[in-house]
Image (cartoon, rainbow, N blue to C red; front, side, top):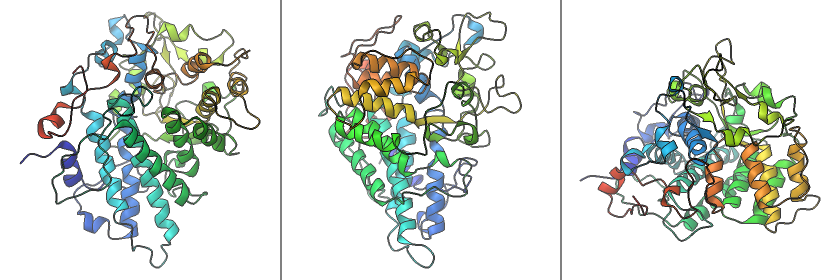
Length: 476
């Protein structure tokens, strides 16, 4: 009997394992769960390996981020055909179909299955030099990873919380059952958000506040207490729990480990290893060419580089929105001879095997950073949250002061929305900001009404073919 693709992943790819430099090699998948998960070392390696899928082409490693920019209007396809390979056409045209959207669905549930296996096997492992806190730290990592996977799934494949929290979301998978056939139905959007928040709150409550995974190349690419709190702020923002969104943003803003990049720093932090980009980064995806999941030629460094595929150029609507003195307006470049008439973001210049500016290469992907926390808090305050010593206007101007941009005289929802677009451009936010605020897209070449079905990706057809409990999104 056929099983869903989710179930196949839960069974045949039940666990990821990895070395401490955990984004270098593809995790081993042929070890039995009993063997791999029987010791603390095996559990620890499994958690390390569970980060690897983030670097995939279908997730933060490329198209999850860049497609969101293309669909929303921060990006466009160059008119000069020398600078396009056709890889962004579907996103640009909003022409998704159920047979071509399985990438993130399968990969995210694959990752969820891995961390579920760890969570289900932690009991009784506190022996010898392994303390209960050691196990709690692993569980906290797993809960964060599971929460982020469900969060990205629900915001891609389901309607926004604000529009209809009772609408079908995505299946919540909390355990890996290798013996029973599962045909999970879609939980509601509200149920998915409730589970995401529950996972993150538990993670916050059990992780050592000083915990940083040891022996890794990039500690900012692993789960820490500030990463948990920053993601909670974002999730609360998406679910319109304004006071909680503001409170968790404040926890990060007041953490002395983080500071806004200065005007001098901002142009020089992209495409660098952690030593050069620390101040704002709370959580990022570490990428390296030798990582088997790395997007390589389809990574953001190639897709936004005129010496790569260059399919994802900056839209003039975005580049023209910056004030002349705003240093963010300098985060764009032309092709070498300026023959294309296009501009590309320099947020993915690549680490470079020599010349980091001109050589497309692996690139770390920032997922959570400090400026977003200021913007989250500003929006939450506008919607009724109260934070001692902070206003929406002061939070907005804290950012503009470090960007060389004029200070705002007043703060409102539209001001915050537009500032988010300018500050977080090409980081995968704009499409979801439109959707979660129930706005119509004002993309000049392909506007989209707020109630258009294309705000949701179609559920992969192969899932529907084998699971009668799943329902397709309207319009597909």
